[in-house]
Image (cartoon, rainbow, N blue to C red; front, side, top):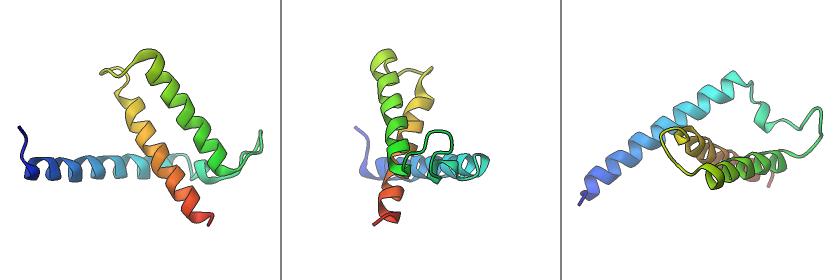
Length: 90
């Protein structure tokens, strides 16, 4: 059984890892996830929801394994981005 301290420490580590991933990707893609679609105009939240749907479908089709571990990280990231989008548009 894992102790509460181990779990809490792991939560901090994982949140920091996801934070770094999100910041790196947001910088690399020049904040494009939070821009209205250029070729196919849609609001930001709808675009993020489409990406979430794609990631969930990939997990449904292939499951979770070492090969698809990045899919889970991407899904976590998109959920955070969706939360941000909703908060920024209130």
